[in-house]
Length: 155
Length: 142
Image 1 (cartoon, rainbow over the protein chains, first blue to last red):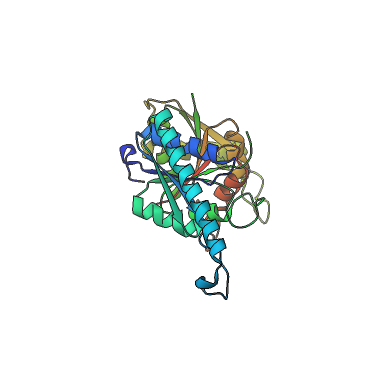
Image 2 (spheres, rainbow over the protein chains, first blue to last red):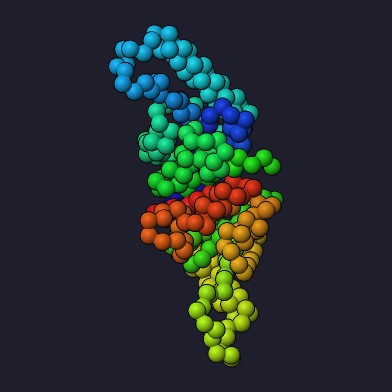
């Protein structure tokens, strides 16, 4: 831990579960106290994995449906970031990245030179009732920056 | 005023956690509670009567260590925020969870003294993450 407070760069990883609000709140608390910005990252699932098929074999219908979803997710993150910037005074930057969640977040930490990452303790992968989500577990194991884990438990 | 709880055990990881928690408490204007936990050592046979170490001795040793760590990491008595200490006996995760019952953040190092080779995330931090009511920050040694 050598980073001085003013050098904070905080990432909050959000999906659009009802849990998201708590994650964002914790991210904003960190960022606001340090006077830093907040990167709101939504990791979108990649293309539907159809083992044994060439990508060209995925029906145009599936593809356009997925493209529609992505556009929608992207719009939601942008709108959320804009609202948060207006209401909290913290600079909130929206980002949607496609890929496997833990790998994607780990490279986002590197690329954005993030000093902190905030995420929920339920993962995309695995079972929802696993309290320590697989994504969170991977991040705790492999990231070099402090990981703030927001519990699923309702307060 | 918010409250941040941090667990220390003298390991490098927990010292990083303490420094992070202190910096964050100052930024947020929150109070900081530094917790150290001691446990009876498991012995194969009872020591001779008289050589038995009393709970008071363990607790005193733990407090001495805690104050030394706090001083070494620059968490001074003249801190701009209230800093309190807690010496608890028993299971480390249990004690941290109890202490963080009404906290805004619980801070732990990614790996303390316990655990064995191959376990990258300390079992204490893992239990805290699994059971804490408040958000948990796992701080990694640099």
